[in-house]
Image (cartoon, rainbow, N blue to C red; front, side, top):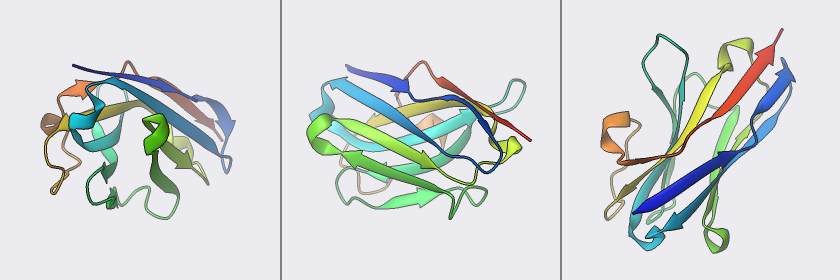
Length: 126
């Protein structure tokens, strides 16, 4: 089993920054892919960024490319999402997710991830 706990959400004005953290515990050695997702009530969960723990490669949704950065502190078993130049449309519940496996092919599809955190709310005001 893998447990994920997000933190770092909050309220910020447009143009501001936040850094989300995701602390992983349990069988973390088995994790191949990790990702950040977001969801607004009534809409599908959207893949924001992905990270391969094997190859250290990253990927981003077009809507956040150049503004968000995903990274990992392997020693702390923590995944981060640095969010800069926030827009009101970035307002959502943000979730961390993990998938066991080799990690050579990571996606931003929610269905490909088996473990999820409880989420942390991000609110961006104009």
